[in-house]
Image (cartoon, rainbow, N blue to C red; front, top):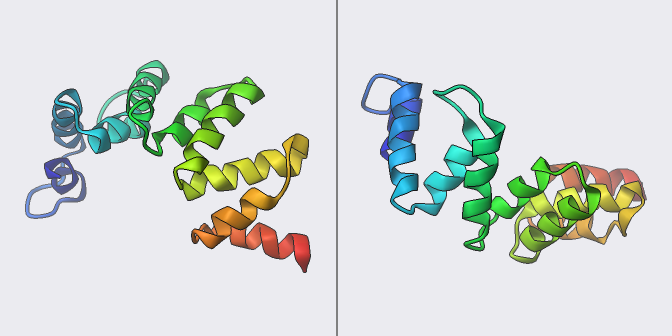
Length: 133
């Protein structure tokens, strides 16, 4: 993605503002990756959590692992859990890990840590090790 080139300075001078502008253009044209990046990063612009939430939710509703990001916005545990579970079901190791956190705090079982660990989530691998050894 051209935005990555601007962001990292690959073949061009680093420019976070231009990176964001380019990413936003792609997001507005329907790129799910760009929508997720615009929602998650806030790099090159002033942070705006409301807009970040809107972009993440738009992406999440298309069925990708941005559902995990959406879960992070909620203070309501049930709503957070719902979005983590949706993302975990499509294979998001971060969502699987976050569900493991929910479960270890009394909101379920540690089975999700195992699932996330199997998907190479190092945080979950660490916590599984602490649980069992």
